[in-house]
Image (cartoon, rainbow, N blue to C red; front, side, top):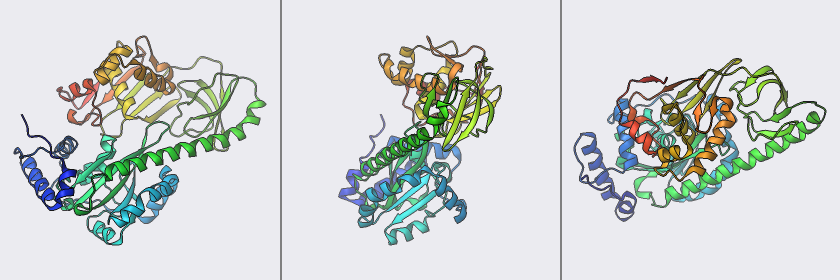
Length: 433
């Protein structure tokens, strides 16, 4: 039986120097392939495994070139995170400054877009390459409080020697992902970082609670934008005959006429005016509206899509791409939707709600959660999915891209069926019949 993981937070509060020494011993032993006297925490051990498999050098401080200031400015202007900066600053900055920490906000690609806090700590961060425009993805700079939460999609605290790259081991980070509350898409990570000796065990919970406040603010922003679009669309829809609906740029419905209300419509990544085929609506005439689109739904039968590509090859960034008669479109998947579509691809003949609940939770009684999530998936995959049992349509070609090493499959997932797949031999690319 292996040694139990150490309670790093508790030890660091009592004796930060001792905690740093113990973590250094754990790191050196584990990376050398030896058993440490205390085990790394599971989230850290799994991250280190990904780094070793991806060829990240723990002794080399490899940094990519920071983005130019113009690109940082462009990303700031386009990022939804700009709407929640006041929430993050109010919740984190005053305490971080007193505690000699800094607040870092990165986008979904791990690029640092904002960085504020104690001036001495900012100077130390410069020495680590923790600067504006820097790339802090896990597979670039190793286990850290920005890249690792983005991969596992949950809050992570990384103490001193838990960093994979040696140059970062004097540092401690507490990062939480910020997701789009409308669809679970990762939009960035907020992180509080500083020297180990200033760390507090409550930091991670504090950062996570502020990240959730930011997501609540994003919900308010979205509701207000739909209200504005509804005011624009109402007189337009009142003049139309037939079926039509007004949606925002992400497909969220503001108003409908002549048809049942749909909460969201899946849109191509780059929608343009004209005649388009959409999975849940069929052929539509697409016209621009201020703040969104007017979709006028046709009556002729839709041309069926024939191909679905489920890309699970990049840990933390899973997508589904649909090839339709009138083109193709892609969508980034939430962790739960990535799990469910993977399971359906594994069971082409179908899987009932109880079976999916068993696969996801090890509990076949949790069918309510499964049915709710499958209902959300069917809103954007439309006729490509059938139910009773849940399955891809028989005439749909389904291809799944898996990571080079199956141990990197859906790293945030605790589903029993996914865990079994991680241990199965495979080729790097699998096309399912």
